[in-house]
Image (cartoon, rainbow, N blue to C red):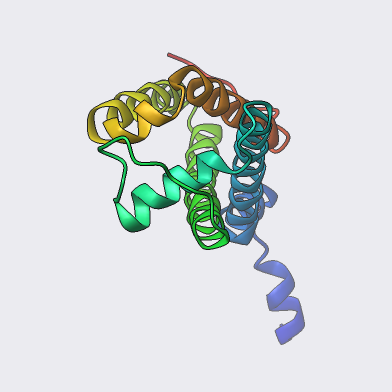
Length: 178
């Protein structure tokens, strides 16, 4: 038997090739895309909320000050938006959302191959959303006093919906079994 004929006889099942391909860069690209969608939605939401309140870029400035400076958030001091704070926080914000997106894409890929894991993914998202809000209220009280928590909740829900839409496009056949 020739080398060419041996190579043809050692074919993989089509499903195994598809599964192997999903574990590669496609899942990561899907997650990064979902993260970019979610981060963009929440950034635009807060730009809208801040602009309507007459203080554009206030939210990323407050969050940037909390992240990089931790100054002026416990007292009544003001946070003035600066290019450094806004861009610094925005970079970290997008990076975190991309990591969350990659994690979500990997979880959905797992759930697609194991329908029993799908319900766990749904519970994870619910706990993550409410856990974020509670952790923010407990550990970042100064930040939450400066930002309206209903706007934070709406922004997170909009971002989650955008990420779910982005991920759903790749997992339309996903079934969830309890």
